[in-house]
Length: 211
Image (cartoon, rainbow, N blue to C red; front, side, top):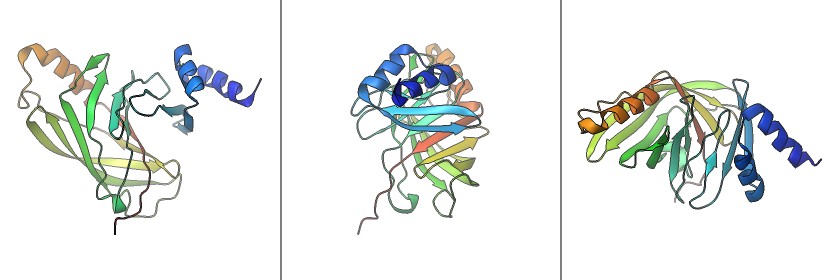
C-alpha cells in the first residue's frame, strides 16, 4: 500500500469523510494541507475555478468561485473562510462571500466582507503561538448593511494558516435587515449558527506590497 493510500485510509478513520469525498480528493490530487486543531484533523482540498472545498472533522462542502472567498459551515457550526490573497500589512484583507450553505439552505443574497483583523499581521507570531485582535466585518443582506467589530483570539498553525476563534461571531438584527416573515425560520437558523462559538480558518498567500 502506498503512503498516499495509507493517508486516505487514515482520513476515513479520523475525519469520517465520505467515499465520494476521498474519490474527489484522490482523483484531483488536491490534498494540499493537513493540520491538527484541538486534537482534530482538518484537511483542505480546493479544486480550481468553480470547484469544491472540503474540510474535516465532519464533511464540509460548498462552491468556490475563482478569485473569491468561500464561507461554509459544517454540522458542528464551525465556519471556514478561504482567502485567496492578502496585500501588504493586512490593509486589504478581504473575503467577499457570495454564497453560504447552512444545512443545505443557500443564502445567495448574504455577503460578508471581512475587512481586517487588527493585530494579526502587526506582531511577530511564531507558529504555535497565540494572540488577540479585533475582526472588522460588514454584513449585507440585499441593500441593508451592518458593521461589526468582533474580539477574536488567533493561533498560527503554519506559515499560511491561522485559526481565529470568537465567542460570538455575528449578532445580526435580521428584522432590521429586511427579512420577510416567510424567511423568518431560515433567518433564525442562520442566526443560531452564526452566534455559537466558532472557529475561522484563514488560508492566504502573501503578496509583495505594490510600489
